[in-house]
Length: 244
Image (cartoon, rainbow, N blue to C red; front, side, top):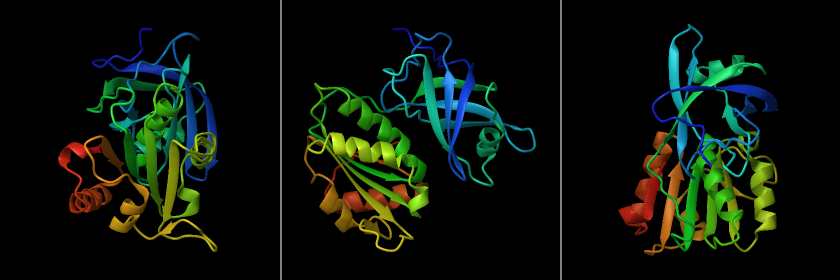
């Protein structure tokens, strides 16, 4: 299958369905040129999306689809729209029938099934999208036995992206995938983690350091920095860590 993406040139894809998921999150479904087309995005890589901000200036930002190349004829982006975000403005204004300019693939992550025994994943906010993509690819491949341990941090319960999809995968693949949610401002009766992701949480919920283990992280820069420090302290080498 030849993918549609072009690493050098932006190509336009039509928005065919927009689904509001919360007050500031929506799922955007884009059609590929034919019903049999595939996007052509390697697992764990992202693409550049181009738009206009509120004053009409061009913006380019990286996004990871929540779909895989096994999803034929379309791709989907789950986007959180921030009040001041420049690309957020573009997505807020997008209507069905509009086009989005995209180029790629981009990214350093290379994945082969069973390349590690287990992944630990540390995600914050919208940093869940590459983790979700890698998780889906592993779990939907019956020959891939990789175990996945996800810690996913957000401010509030409402901020958790893709929760239903993540929980469904955890139910279908209980021996291969588990998730621990952490909230900064938890609701009454919350049973998950509270506060910021700590060293103790990583020790409890991620596989211990080993040459056949890798810890992936993706989140806001201050969080990535804090997590790198935790992982170093816990004995994970540079080879055992990857930051999206």
